[in-house]
Image (cartoon, rainbow, N blue to C red; front, side):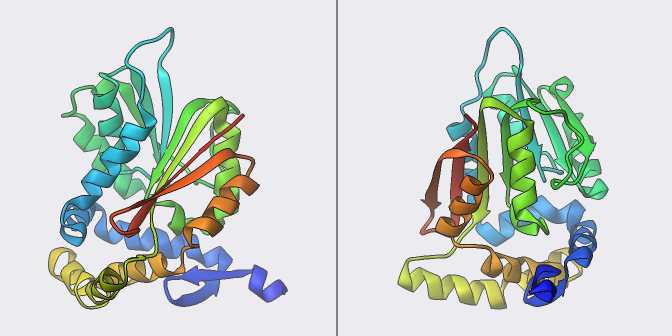
Length: 254
């Protein structure tokens, strides 16, 4: 039992729990400059629609007595943060947080050219130990990042802690395809196209082999919803996207 508690998945490998974060960091250091390009190639651009749906579900307000504060976790390149700011017409204040400094550097450089560059800040932080006070944010978003956290339960508890009462959690993550024909096509694409595509674009297939394997090891939507509830959230939901290639999980802190 003790051995199982001290190990975790890194793709298809079982590794010491203490080693996973360093291994994940290495993956994203390698791909930071081409991360969003690879997302476009791997998904045919569909990831943009999924992120658009997450921001639409968030529905950030465009006015109010004080700014709408959002923590976008594992959001280094700023893709989601920019969408939130644009949707709020600059009323939101977004803190982009990531454990990987290279990803944050990419996002910070891009933010100089955004419509609302003064409404975002970039903070290097670990999702399991956030450097923010209790009740700091009205919303917590994370897109395709939660499965890379070694202790997902801790990250969810931290998300709950930093949200105000009435705050919202939105998690966009890959899921398990549940359309029989599509499932086989998706499996073949994942195994035989994504890693070679990664090698062609970034010069290294290994990070994308890990990403494919990490998706398969992530809990199914019902199990992940149970983890969200265990962290203290209420009204937990999940919405399948594109044949359940991805799922949008939502919950509230009351």
